[in-house]
Length: 247
Ligand SMILES: [Zn+2]
Image (cartoon, rainbow, N blue to C red):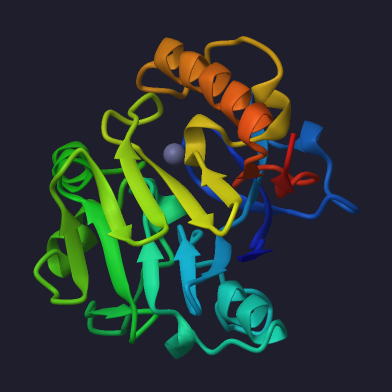
């Protein structure tokens, strides 16, 4: 199993829920609205079972070249968008799901990874559509839910294919998914926004941005113990320094 972080860069987010690019070498956090959070946005490519599996899709951020940053990142490791066979989506907040599709000039949704199957949980999708903006791009979700490439998960936990398991864990959103990858004696883990940064694993706290902050805190504590015991490689979506960490 191989894991590649595919960072779109650092961004700040404030109460408007808008993500603004942040250059750590030039920009000053004090100049952003009070309470702004600085986060990395970092999807992952996992190579497992001779397949390229993408975990979450980023914002769909386009750099100066006008091309999707995630495409540029994949190109650097020799992978075309058509080489992605599965896309796993932990939850539908825009910084995780914005890169699923691009909207063309006529408002038509085009899936960014044309050969991939996209795995999204039905309960998360229904919740996102009921909630709408600004955290969710709800109109777009309605448009793609019937696309045959979108595989709607209905069980609360299960297997996507041998070696890849998912489970509704909640916490950050009511139906947030976590993913486990097993190949040989290696285990990799993605806890999405329940476990977004290494520093959060080592201290007990309740995050205001979570749907159920206490649940997230308890999950982090359980996962960290398991990670230590079973040598999980943990993938941190919002961690600038520690993309993949094995305790
Ligand atoms: Zn989120």
